[in-house]
Length: 419
Image 1 (tube, helix red, strand yellow):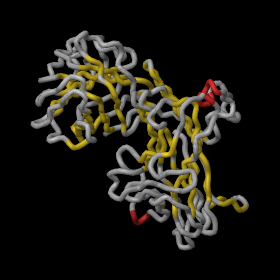
Image 2: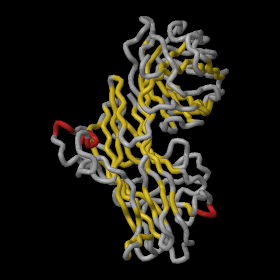
Image 3: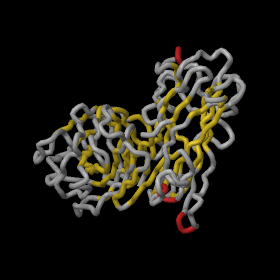
Image 4: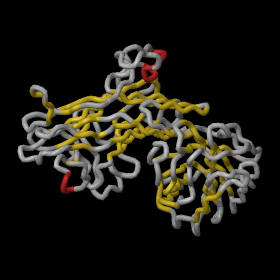
């Protein structure tokens, strides 16, 4: 994980990190059962893709093809890269992944007028595959009273308390739906399946990540503008390669760089996204500054130490008024790319723009940059995109009475595609 360094006007420096998290979804492999339809508009979103991360939330979403009565449901089974996504094959659990503490979070249904909370959270069980001697590798969700689903309804179920695989790289989720009581036993005895599909996911501790299961996504973050294909093949450190996005933000005087009440200090980071996801991709910005949302002092994230608060309404940062925010620039083309290398576009999400600063913090941490999945800052307009760059300009200033100390916040970018 790479890092950003923020400095206040008197203290030395502080460290905040900006890393990249990636949730990737991909289509089912060829259907293994002749009577089962392929699930469409399917995705799985992770609240963190860091290897060995604990208490991670996974949200599965798909459009129902075959109606599901009350008491029906689906199985979400996780398989390692060796056994893969094929639905009629053996499935070995990704090393280190643990579903034994999984619980149902939010459940919602869209019958055509948008997602609304389900009548019941339903019930959840997790278990070992009978042929596996490792930990749990699937969860079985059963709908509650009043929650039947018709064809073309959309279902979204959150699972909390999951421990990620311990190694970086690609792993898979297989989805099996059941019109009535799920009778799944294991991957080779899945029972009476209504519909099915596969999803590709990736854990990483690096900046640039590529995940392929027929479809693909490539996403990277750098301290300098990025050449096509995330600078693949360029000597590290050369112009256009992916470099460490660590930065010192402040005004430099002699050997000291620190924030000032007389100026707005800025530094840039850069992101590049390519995906052939038919539903495009969304990139969220997430901060660990719970109860604060801005830059917190001396490693304590609470309102009492949030002396450089976030700019929660889009606009200018005024020197001398302590604030922190980010401008999301317009999409640009890599300098070495030709027309054949590029397609689609990237656009700002919500109120983020190239002309105003913003940091979408919401009090209570239920949503926004400190929410479970972060705050959407740019997307590909629900379409595939290839080799498009976005500059991110971080800006900060302090007031004359901003307490001395070391300020920072850990930031992550999360990219999620829908196939």
